[in-house]
Length: 272
Image (cartoon, rainbow, N blue to C red; front, side):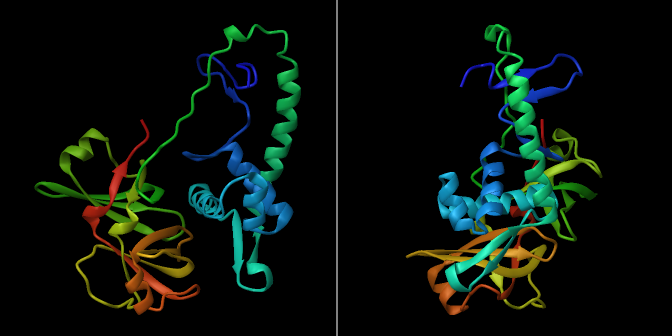
């Protein structure tokens, strides 16, 4: 791909144009491949078929769908499990609008790039992408709802999409360094192995966070099992438990479970 076909970045406060087009939703973005996945889901009505069409694994497609639903702030894809052929998937009205926007922008991109064919590509700066890579399986975007400062640590309450709320315990130095304040956008990261699952929604525990929802997917491995919950507020959360624990709890799709997360196990991050 030539420099011209990658990006033109305007100076000062002028808008920046990216190619291939990607869509920003708040602080997150949908990459070209994820946009192609949305198109394929709309065309095939199946996440597995869409994954094959785009050229990614079934698990990668599911992970991308989960990420898009979380980052968008509203579900883009609705799936139905079971039935002949393993169930299907459809785009929500918001998802369809995203696909329509992508198709229109792609047509505009073709016309725009054609108009730049006579421009020396050396004068076009390379584009940059802001991406966040982390080993944490769960990454949630929200805003700081409240900060309770103690003698040493501070308790930060984060409002995510829907009514989901996450509480994190960080040092006072972290509050100052990240300039955390009510209303500031923030990332909440939780490793899947730090999550404890329970079927008892009323159990009293020392965990500060209790996020409940319905099991949407279970991936059994020889040692561990990955359990994905569709939370009440709309987010998805993945937990890794032992194979024996998943078997003893008879974890299955459609089951009601709660995820217990210690506040000290929630890592916070902000955009630079």
